[in-house]
Length: 103
Image 1: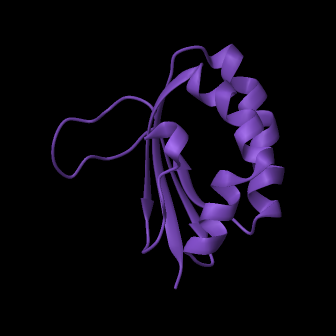
Image 2: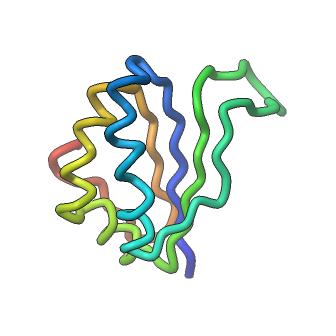
Image 3: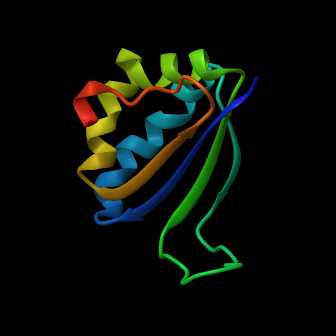
């Protein structure tokens, strides 16, 4: 069963975020992940529109999603995202675990 990760990012330092962005796709592909959609402009159906970027990632299963997120490669670039954006990141799929370091 496919697993998904949905992120909403508000850049606090777009220049600093570039290091994360430049290294993200090869790591995502390495672990079988795909970007289904990414958009800086969304049409709200309900509620107030949050500023920022919305991204939906897809993985073959929850194990693949966890391998990607927990991988040494992704963990190496993660500080570039967390230092330069405010992110809400949700894993959807049974078994997607929240890492202890971010709990």
